[in-house]
Length: 239
Image (cartoon, rainbow, N blue to C red; front, top):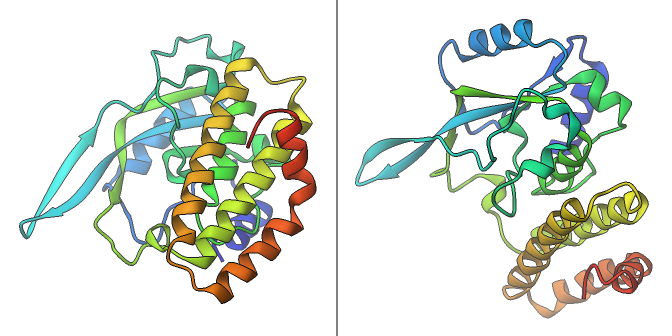
């Protein structure tokens, strides 16, 4: 799966920086050259935020829609005082790994690895990155082409495995909130709770298409994690 492969990349890569590209998307020609120039200028940054194009199929034509608003307020040069999540303008923030260049040392030092989640594994990984990253920079020139018209994309799957993935996202992200509760700011916790709510809604939507057999299997997954869900309820984090 995706998580296993990405973790293998993190552990065995020899470079200083990591970039995760989805197999059904594209890179803009010569875009990594621009990224490298930024890295050489700002080697102290632990995270680079990338702009991108959306590629949409409409009336048998391809439309490239540049996304200029990457959902953050203006970030000053002294951005290393606050976590990245403090600058989020929209909720939920960006939840895709391909919009970031990661310094490998940052991932290793913070023990950031992907959990074994079938789909939407970024929903658990990226919010934690947002809370821990304090030294970052936006690269405004687009690098990536997001092919949102791909119907076979794993992120567009629905049903049992997606519902299970949502349970796992709530579990791991909820565990992170409880463990870091004393260190996280109120705004950071509020944004994380919004992402939990998003996973909670997605979970229920994906139960609508399940038969009784899969609903029974799903209930076993809920029971498996019930002790943490009870803790989250006590903290008034989830219903």
